[in-house]
Amino acid sequence: MPNPEENTRLIELTSRAASINKELLKEEEELITAIKENSETGRLERISDKINSLIRKENLFVGALSAVLKKFKQK
Image 1 (tube, one colour):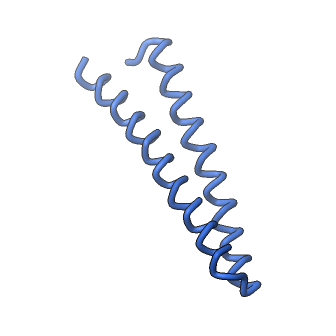
Image 2 (tube, helix red, strand yellow):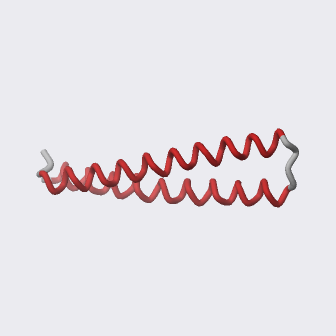
């Protein structure tokens, strides 16, 4: 069982991943809207690049969360 300090770290990592996920959903909705509006390719590429960046960022936090959980298992 994680100690209070470890619990705080888990909560921070999970909250950050959830926050990024919300931002990711917003960008994906924006991309759908842009496609429906027949927006220029440059705009679609910018939104797509931002989505890719957010996915990488979210994966970093999820990976860190997994690493912390793995430490708990080893104790």
